[in-house]
Image 1: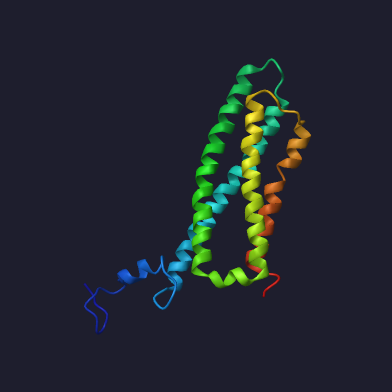
Image 2: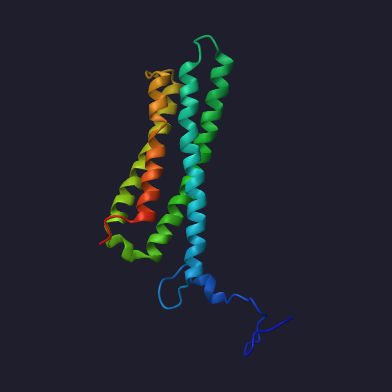
Length: 175
């Protein structure tokens, strides 16, 4: 086993301290730790939004189901319920890793782009919640919207994701 000059540890060994730096901010914190947290945040946000993109598409199909097609409606309802549950599970780590990044870089809170991004996050949570309420309306046969309305409703998470990505990458309103 090769060792680094002056160290008794194998080459490429990551000190235990690096793992704990994921939890801390300060002299021991490493950029590598923050990059791991950021990577998982991106993966879970993308997964969460995939569910937010597809769930209203199921609502479009539910709104188009003919009144007598019970089997088709039940199949779509089952898909929507499972997708909402899974999307909710994905939202939790997405938000958790986002909060973790915020703690690791709390100075970003003083910047305008972060305030705008937090508004986008609150809107995404609200949209997610509204999907759950709309699914309940479908379950109780109280949908009052046409498939065309649902197609427009389906575009909102795209706008939210575009806004979040632009805010994080471009960082307008620095300061």
